[in-house]
Structure formats: C-alpha cells, structure tokens
Length: 253
Image (cartoon, rainbow, N blue to C red):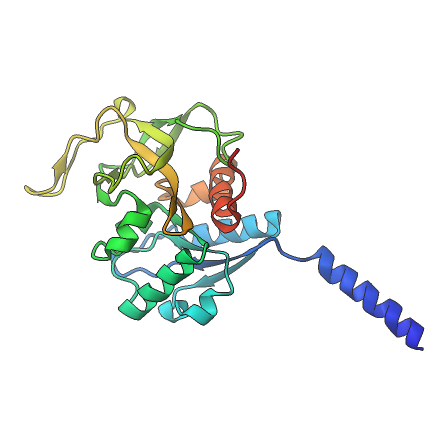
C-alpha cells in the first residue's frame, strides 16, 4: 500500500511539474479618465497569450492589489489602457518597491495617459501622451529588431490605429526604441483647442520602446487602441515579447 501511495505521489508531482507556469503577471485595467471599449478584447487577447505561452495572468481593476504582499506574487504588471489617477500614495509606493526589487512593467497604449502627476511613473513610461489625430492607416517601421517578439515583425508594415503623439522623453538616450510610425504616411495634425495643437513629432515618431528602470524593466507599446489588434498575430507577438522580457529579463541578445 505504501509503495502504491509513493508511486501515486510521484505521478501527481510529475503532472504538476508539467503544468508549471513560466511566470505570473498582474493585468491591471482601472480607468479614471477615458475608458477604452477595447479593454475587454485586450484582456481576452492577453489571456490567450497566457494559455499559448504557459504563464499565469490575473486580471484586476481594483487598485487594492497594489500592496507589497500581493505584488510579491507577480513577476510583472501590465497596464492595459489605464487612464488618469488610478493609484493612491500608498499603492504607488508599493509599486515602486515592486519595480525596484527587479520586477517588470508593460504599458499598452493609454498607459501613457495615466498618472501624469507621479514623476516616478512618467519616467518609467518614458514618454507621456500629449495628443492624437483621428484614427488613420499609416506605415510602421522597425527601428530595432533585437528584442523578443520582433522576429516576424516586418521592417515596414501598413497599420491602422490611434497614433499617439508623445511629450518629450525625460531622458532620450535611455529609451531603446523598437518601432516608429512614418508621419509622411498619414496626417498627424491635431487640434484640441487653442492650447493643444500639433503638427506631429517630426522626422522620428516612436511608438514602442523599452528600458531598464530603477532596478527593474519597463516596456511600452503605443499600439492597441482598436480591439481587433488583440487577435492580430503580429501585434500579439510584439506584445508577448514585451511581457516575456519584462517578466524574465530574457530575450535581448
């Protein structure tokens, strides 16, 4: 009987090991400003990525999860189309400690339209949202393919999205740009009143980047406004590459 129990325990342990997850991420979608209807499609897309790539994802809109004890369970945190002031001072401190412990952050689209009054966060994002024109089709150009998820991203590709224009980076030589949008391929002009007008960012308009930050890692992509992109394989490869790098620090040659 004892021998049978030992064999059974070994079988169970082996099965558990075969289903062990690579890493665990927190997916956060709280909004205190504009609410993107594509959030639910984004959640579904990221859950599919988790199933495909064998990692665990927990979806939360309640900011109470931002405490040291609960954050300690995760390797990375994803901000999916978050907007506005979403964390209080205590929660911000807990998240800062999370990144400082060597963990990662992934920002998607409106994550750059979040927490403008939190300097630590704006530096982590790298470039904050300023304005955008109407949704249009444009060309994307790869700047650097030496990053996970960029293997099948074509050097130049047609894409339709909401093209964010960003404020100047806090430290431009720190950000490692991956993808840019060609402003000559669409009309970047936007006007949101007398004090907020733009003709675009000029010769180089970055749309995705990454950097090491305050002991941890940060990846951002400006793509992701339209819900159907979360079922587009090129975008999903790009997004998983950012998640994988943020959670593990692996993938860059």
